Length: 134
Image (cartoon, rainbow, N blue to C red; front, side, top):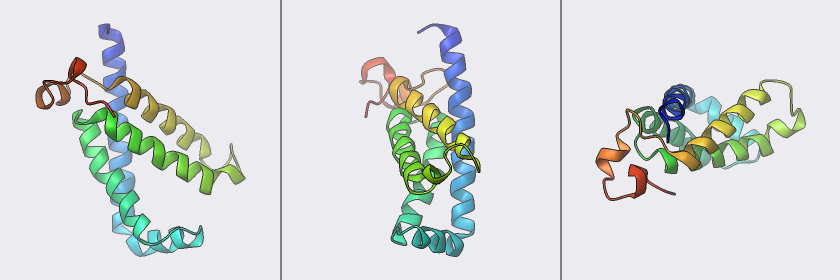
């Protein structure tokens, strides 16, 4: 991959990690409300913990470039679920665009991984291109 691509992916990876970390932290800090919201859309309460953990832990992992491709898949699945259960009612209103953009960023990370200033190449040395594949 060329250096410009890697720098661009690094920037996407870092900001995506921060965004998911903050959203996961917010869910944990207001878990009672998160559980109520999940219940209001027909999801079991334990899913609030699962999604919050994916966002919080996944955000940290992606920020540091660790298991980027796997976490990218988890983020994408989470966002697809959010879009289907909540956002389809108003597809381009009420910050749905933000979810679409995060979905595409997550798919990009899942497909390409991220090597530049990432831990993946050091932790998963035996994997092709230093990226953990999903």
